[in-house]
Length: 294
Image (spheres, rainbow, N blue to C red):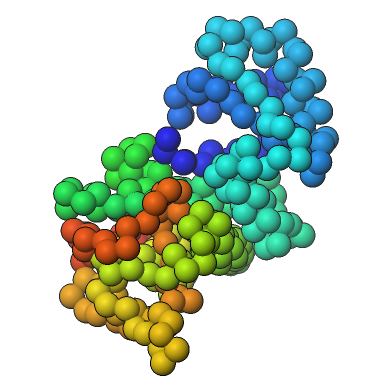
């Protein structure tokens, strides 16, 4: 599983619109063997609409032709959906609380959504111990073999005042969604890790690769490091750690260190981990390429 996100804005709830979206998904991501749909009380209207769509002969023919199975999750059982349910919830919450009441045209909204999709698919999942070329596994690296970035129009390069204002507004929207989502995502990682392993296991271990929370404003950038030593307080509780990032070592409180996404799903945690062979000199993705205004 790549854990990649595919987000698309539909203008209507017509069956033809849905079929077009499903075909685009297959064209861009490949044919899925099974599609899961949410069936919770929060999305009753959407669930009813999907059930109605599923009864349409055209949809049935397409699913049969492509050999795709469609399954609704059990109502009021969000754990059935696992990781994808949590990611969908985080995205919706971030969008609602940042641009939910904003005034965006359909074109602008699709631009923001596309940026959100690409940025979130650059999130670090785990690391490859032996491959120094691709030390960080991301959904995009699993899909394309590399990180993926979108060229962005820099507002100061736009000559038209109206277009420059629009470019600034869109960038603010994208940054607002990114900041909101990143904070909620990191909080969710810790909660997930505590649920799987207990609160005591959430403290960083020597050799563990962790996400370092920072004030990095560049969307899609993640600061990663390897824990070299832990810092214990006078109460014998781990309060921080010395983390190697590239050629430097920084000290951070445990509140600013977060586990990688795939490590949250491990069933066992080794007490004395072997230091990871991570290429920490290049844990971050390259800055977004800039293009000249047309």
